[in-house]
Amino acid sequence: MKILLAIDGSDFSKVAIHELIKMTLSSNSEIHIINVYEVPKTTGLGLHTMGGRIGNYIEEIRSNAQKLGNKIVSEAFDKIKAENKALTITTSVVSGLPKSTIYEKAEDWGADLIVVGSQGHGALSRLVLGSVSQYLTTNAKCSVL
View 1 (tube, rainbow, N blue to C red):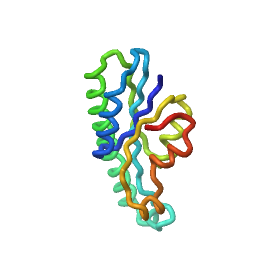
View 2: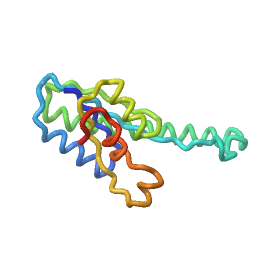
View 3: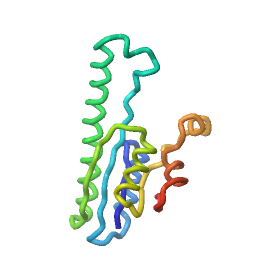
View 4: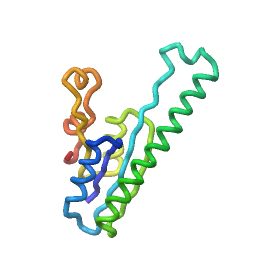
C-alpha cells in the first residue's frame, strides 16, 4: 500500500501522524511524507518593482519555509519509523499551492491513501481559501483519511 502523508506541523497534522501510526501496515507498505509551503507571489502586487530587497525577502521566506518543512517531515519520519522499522519512508518538502501539489503528488506516485489533517477553518475561510482536506476528499482518486 502506498500512503501519502501530507503535514504542515499543525496540531491537526500531529493527529494525522498518530492515526497513521495506529494503522496496521504490511512491511511492504510505502509512506511518502510531504510538506507543501506557499511563498507569497510578488507579481500583480507591484512588489517586483521595488528592486532586490523584495527578492531577498521572498528568498528568505522560501529558505525558512524549506528549513521548517524539513524539520516537520524529519520529526514525522522519526515517529513513524520508531513504530515500524520495516516501512519504506520517503520525504519531500516543496513549494506550491498545497491542495493541488498534494493532489498531483498522490496522482503521480500512485497513492492508495492520502492521510491529511483537517485545519478546522470556519465556513467563511473555507469558502474563500478552500480546504485542502475537502479538496482532496472531493477530487482524489484514492481514499483520504
